[in-house]
Image (cartoon, rainbow, N blue to C red):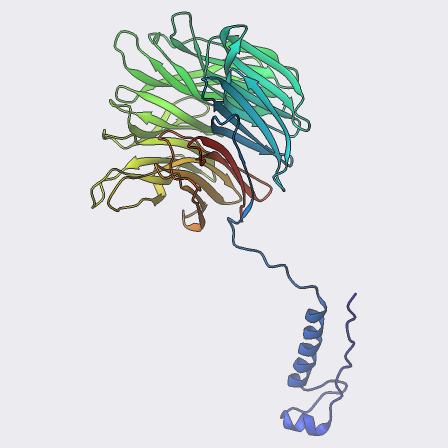
Length: 473
């Protein structure tokens, strides 16, 4: 250990006191000498301390994992993080047409692979986890027929604890996990191939079904499904789309259930100009907010808010114009009285070529007033389509992720929650240029780190699933 040198307090002479124009009190030095002595002691103490570690700026890459199964196309679609682990769910489509669901768990600090599971003839949709469980949803072929799948693993080892399945493809199955309960919402196909909404709740540890609701609202007997689910304080909120068979229009369906009994507190259906398809939903004790697609061409961005206690409509915002490309809301979070939404929209620009804007918007959650907007777009000759694909909110910051269609460039931004100002930004350029329209990304913040899952092209022209861990400061 480094020794700290002891310094004696300086003795003061009358000459020194006169030079300082101050006569010393008994046992005291003039102020300038006392400050000099204190400064020397402070300097010695500082020199005795170990050097302060030097850290890079927020957004530094800490680790990454890229994987390719059987030279197939691997697309990561969902991820979650808890209790020192990160779990990514991806779907592999091989050249021979086979499909496989992959679940991979990593050490959140180092990126080391902890365990993995593969399910042949299956595709993944969503994942939820806590300190004990990892639950994955998807669709697969069970005993020669299409089935909806729910699989629950022990988070520490990847041991399969239980599995549930039911006839019909699991369309857009979403998960929410809280305490002892698991909520599932999505769509299920009937014998005629028509999709209908389904909501279900489980005792998460053992997979016991508490209740199931497959009902559609009156006069909405056409195709429909849920695109999002939340579970908080024992209350389940689901949001989806339902269709009028005769008229052919779609409306947004929002419901509130008690997780233990399935008792429905309220149901609201709201049309949004011919179509209304929620892709994400967030809820707290006061509000339910959903975002997705709407409009005659099913290509308008929209966000709607409802009273969580009554289901009453509060406010809406949308692009209100059709386009040759899709304007879409992809993710929503509620924090500090704000509804934070990510997505993309078309913009004309000043140069020829198709252009789309990555955006993050903050609304006042009660009134719908736009508080701030953060965007990224490129106004140059050519096609530049930037998509905001997911976001997470933690410690007063918004972490938004997206990708440039065609180029494959990943964009990650950390924003101030209060203002939308950029704290840091990182772009990741894959080795091989390219990204398909409609590719997904997922983001999760845990333990001061931001984890992003998505896909990139490899040298063989296939897509690899990719997980990256970044410093979230």
